[in-house]
Image (cartoon, rainbow, N blue to C red):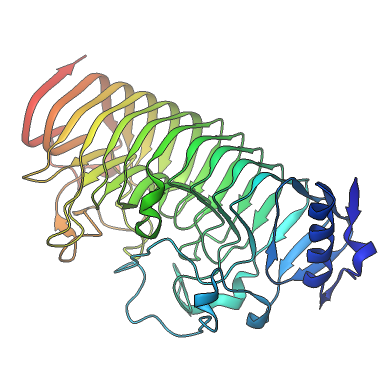
Length: 444
């Protein structure tokens, strides 16, 4: 059965708060055992928080726009304990210096919790109204007014979740945050966020299992697809059994990232047949907490990178793998059995692998790769970026085709490095740079 929100009092004039009417339609649908809640096309529906229920499909018809309200009072708290916690205050430090996050936002836009069989579908648009959350603005970076801000979609403990075809745009924080979800299909969606708006990640599977993300186009800052295991949700276990395929990705940070929140393990993850363009980092594995990363395959990728400012982590690396303690007394886990195969890289840096003196990267394979380095921006190439970590995290270092510090069991087979002449002033003549690395195999 179809539940049209206009029949429940929605106006769709872009000014009236239609949230209560939409929620009535969702509640009626759930009470009847499930069905489709229709958001008709040709209208803008302003809304605050909406709570989805089991067996409900929220369908946005073509030409519809569900737009986040500018009134903070329209957004409800995730938990009753957070009542009156919405604050519009400046950050004490910039988010690029310290943005530790336990994974629990205080308020929500669209949320489902401890539910099953939920679907978000249609070719309409959900608009996060990012301008409501602007803090300091400069040429390269828009800081938020507070942290954490309101995620667009927060799915907690949902089993059998489908998100298909919709466009999600102008989010001011994590766009799709999946917490402890299982059996998830995200297919054919578009995420179109501001490449200057900090922390507006695309899709964040957090302690999730059996996830498929395919045929999506994502533009976002910080990252496009980010696997997390956040501290608040540590009891939910690892991120595992995940496939990402056939996506196009653009980011001012990393297109595909693991971490930095990493209190539990990441394992059995495949990323294949994707195109990454105009991105500060292509692939970034950033282990900073107690969990480990293992059994991960990246294959059949095209990666184009370019630098942005130091306000974004990274130095234009096509691939960056780091295991660094976040702070003293908080040991990072281990990275092992990671494979990169059939990858074309073009950009201002190559492959950067960096473990620690007491935590070597292990069993990393690079096979069938072409790395072409060329200068594309005005930003200098004179440092390595290990942020976030103790200290500044920026240390002097030249770019190379492949850099490895503190590694063991590194395999490079059929890896070719070339560079344009405009890179000469930044290079030190070494295509492959090894430091404190054991058991290396380089084979043409």
